[in-house]
Image: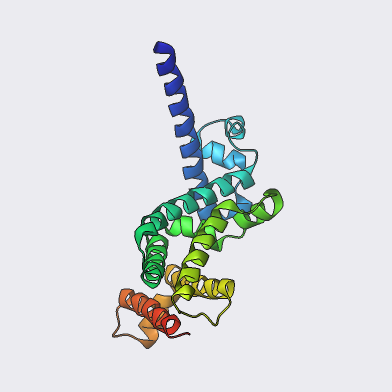
Length: 214
């Protein structure tokens, strides 16, 4: 029993160290940029030896990819609740709303997942197999689009092209909001409209457009 407690404590300490490494690395990557951050800088911020970080990650590319994975796992968990939504177009709309809310609630992870190029560079260099996390997220969208097509929606459009169009459009809306461009355009050209309702309006317009495609 005592040996089990000691082992559990050791595992807890390891997981806490891993969590702290990722938390500090995320802060530094977003503040200074990937190229300006080194394993030593992460270690200095944590007041630990660089050697300790190398026990968990082989290099900073491995660190930023681990952050990338954390973000996709969180998004996947939120998509998972939609499994019981039988009507595919309603499921598609719900996926879009979840994606937008995830981006607004987690701008740091969103930037690592979809804006910064270094994580996907790491995937291209180091992942011999399929990109599991991103593939699963896009696969969920493709499956939902396929279900919509089986119900007569946008059946004239090639499946993956339609999924890519939907994702890239919603990503554009999120990116414009997070980078401040959407707010600026609203302020300059639509001063009587609230920014949040503009985001909602853009999404609803997309839904109206794709709903009318046969």
